[in-house]
Picture 1 (tube, rainbow, N blue to C red):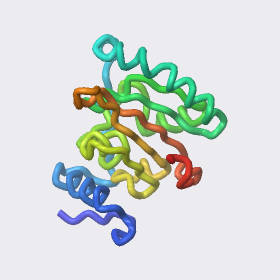
Picture 2 (cartoon, rainbow, N blue to C red):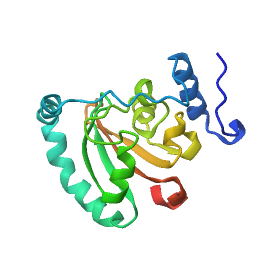
Picture 3 (cartoon, rainbow, N blue to C red):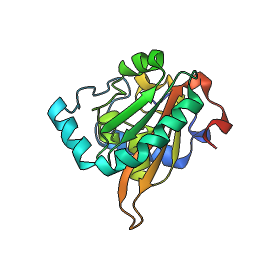
Picture 4 (tube, helix red, strand yellow):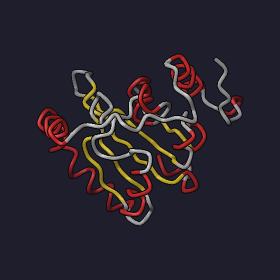
Length: 177
């Protein structure tokens, strides 16, 4: 299968190229993104119960970061290790735009669902990642710049992923320092 991804691979980090290859091997197409992998209200409540401690400890951080980025047309997300977004805070206008690609509470953002993206790729790589514009596998997500970092328990298991997403034109290298 030949997939033409619209980016100069010479400037694309190896981990993103490897993610693209994983997406291709799963049969994903850059022009068609799965938007239906959503938790229902009951399932989302179960995730909130399962990750209550993570939500409790991260809530003050989410609010503090949100106040720092307020007005920058962005969204801050917390995802479970299974890729489901369990909490969001952000600019209402950007939240409406992000909703068009299912970047919202209850959506699954694993690579096999949404292609190369910060949440899913951070889970695979087990490291912080930045996915900018056309580095996203799916064309629908090229308007985004996303930075995500896994959150680990002291014993080493993955607790979740913290993600900051904004319009790709808002990208600045210091914004994720």
